[in-house]
Length: 133
Ligand SMILES: [Zn+2]
Image (cartoon, rainbow, N blue to C red; front, top):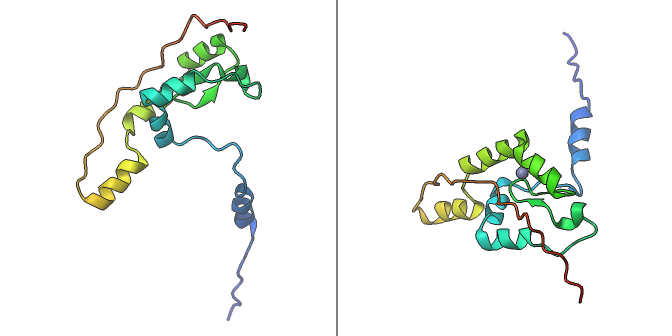
């Protein structure tokens, strides 16, 4: 009879607990970004009030990646980067939102998600100068 040795290391448990708590830097989910891409929402995000707490005072925002950039140059570089292109691809492949999922579950009239065309937002080259009042 060999004694059953239960090796209980709390290692993995401790790690998952450590991950919990306040998710300060929570990434936006793809479905949230889809909501951001609606023209009215997008317009608001691209024309934010200058916020000194955010990189570039919130004037350079990539809608698709939900990221702020310090200036137009770094934003343009980002648009050409792999991460951004990958994100556009992801967004075009997963166009369905939580709202749609709930509707599909509740009503039974499921409308399959359509492919959406996702493009990099146009860059506003002429950044309006702040009118001094
Ligand atoms: Zn991006």
